[in-house]
Length: 106
Image (tube, rainbow, N blue to C red):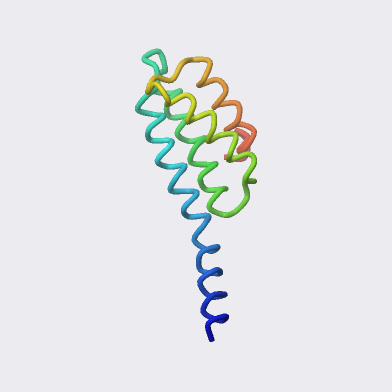
């Protein structure tokens, strides 16, 4: 009985994992958007948000690997360390987003 309960808990946890990843990416996206440099235009902001939305949707479906998500997470966390995203940091983040969700697939 305990083994069945343990297996059920593990399955429920693994089923919720993609949603947790999506939630974490959403929080990171929101923090990043708030820290973008002034020269970023509204169109660029919208494109960045759309790229994140695509990656979040793919992550919630389990279609993004852990290594790639780790790379994106490390870049975002490094960029947000001083709460100001530089153009160079933003270029790196955009590059990873484009790799995870190419513009034609959005």
